[in-house]
Length: 607
Image (tube, rainbow, N blue to C red):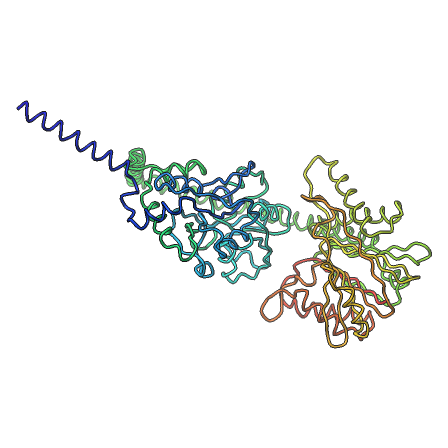
């Protein structure tokens, strides 16, 4: 009996030692000789990454690669002996994709799979999965699914898997693109866009830690879940097999610990007795409720009859109150409409009258079509030196309707102050002054107000036909006869700010604006001043974006700048007043039954 007991003890010790040895050997037992040899020959694996996809993949403030993907790489490194090294100084996700396409790196540790990427990557099985969600401002209209974004502006990160996925859903929306999720959320917060879409983990992290207090998760996005994988450069199957085998060896407990570190999500294993007791309690309560209902049915039925009579009486009283409230609302609505109409009169009184414009320019027009009664767009014209110096512009302020109109009056005042009170002639200096004036005025409120305007501002010296121009987002178009095409080609050659469009009898010089608003912005730089020598017959056009952003036509698409440029060339033979009517007729026909999406303002001048 003593010998038998000792034998059992020795046997248990032997089994424990074997189990411990197995754990220490780890993943090496699942790798074949070829894979072990590959690790010996390639101890260091260079990888690319997304610099701004928190909490999955990002570079922290000290320039160190962090995130869920990094924790998985550390586990793989510990189990295999591979040393994963991030490629230095990557600036964007697009750069990472370019690096792995040219095989300057072997791995991207967090990426989604699609047909485009299958051409240059092999993928592991997904190691984390998250649903997609839609993000809007807290005060935005209700959004319950992707289709509710029809007619709106969606901002998406460049070259992201989610971007391709959302674009494939046939949404009639305007897509704009930014570098990384932080910039996308900033675009929604600053009203450059109405919404963005990304997986729940990324959105939750940015909303919790990056100060986007006026943004919300509006709803789940009706899309397949975001399956995050590791992508290995083509022709490196051995590395792919090593990583996949190691991922298969990572325990559920290890995975849960990584997720908890970054998302504070708790994973529990085994039987949840607390939940069982909760369910049992609910079941018992339901049983008691059914029994009580059965016992007291007759008594409750009598009470219900009495309550129904009382409810009918209260319903009638409520109906009478609602009717009275409806009448009050109609009166208030009429008062508000009257106030807005008066605001329109005030705004029109500030804007230069068309007769004054026609006195300054023999051939000119302004197409001004507010989306609502009052407008966030406005046009400006002022002269100096006996009408020999002419300053004119079109501007698109933050918002439209009453809020946009209030901002437009402030912006108009800053331009007038720069031109008349400060006697500034240079358009770039005028915009610099207006920007600083707007920032100073809004900072007095103590709130972080980022309102401002996009604008296209011209100064024409009538004596020598010299044009000076500066723009914030909105360009300038100069249409000339093709007899002057050679001069325009020379002007555009080597100038990145100038683009030339050639047509049968005319051509267009497009002078591009600075990519910054007149207002508060992350990186403020002085506006660029452009000088150009005009000739008789040149036609100038400046515009807000409302005309070419309008949805319509046969397929409900945007009108776009290409179609507008072609239309302006086609009507060059007409007087400017007739051009005004042609543009208005074309816009209304294109819009059809669609709602007008923005204010419209186009200023045309023939020299």
